Length: 387
Image (cartoon, rainbow, N blue to C red; front, side, top):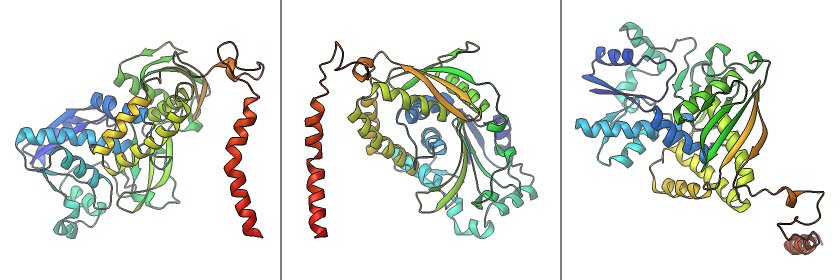
């Protein structure tokens, strides 16, 4: 057995201890790969660019990490000559689907071993409590505790908490559970202003207008977004979502940097993006999120969507100024060299469109008449139904 651990930014993870633990419990060796830069550049920022959000609430923190991890896992498997991969995802969750779908897309001949779907394994281990008891008996250290038996998934994009006491949908999370964010109640009393610059829909620079911090490296930029947004209590949600396998699941998530970048990106699109392009890309973003959540990152339809989103983002360029305060993100302004917004055209104080545009308000009369034809026709139909 060759153990593999991906460094995707887990909170305070000791990877030397991970290696030692893997070997001590029987692995022939343990490979740890630092995927943080790859994760940010090719998965996190791609999700920000797509405005990826599942069921209007979940920012896909676990979902986007799985293809990143799977790609490296398959690379190692091929390098080592392995014919099988194995994972510890449960038989009720999404991750079993994501890992194996990604693996099949990248290496069609690879086969998967999933202990949580093996009858003999399940007979011995009914659930997490049995595994915890086994680990205690054999001196294997784990983070989870029987009384607060959260299932925690961590990466630099988010931390998620499921299972244990959270399976009671009315049981709120303990404040001590959170790792990436300060409670909004305990956040600083003073607001903080930043500017985020985008190019082709990708964040390329962050500036703190207070202490003058400036960061352009993608990984460091995102880590700083996490730091400053988490400091101000931004990015917590508590939801019940629909898993791909048909089960509803309650989860608590922290996504500070992702929440911040999403709000900034959405705002910049408002000034840069054509109305109809925006309408279409909203549908593409929803499909991007669905495919990502369900494990289809490497599917041909995802390639189509991502290429389409890239085309739509080619003019999303500029700066957004933001104020952060006690869990709130307030947009204070935005500017772009490719803005479609024109103050004279939009002004209520200038008749027409100003010097640059030929706009006659009187034309709106015919515009309204034409667009109301179908409404009048429908109303006439309903009137006949009532006769």
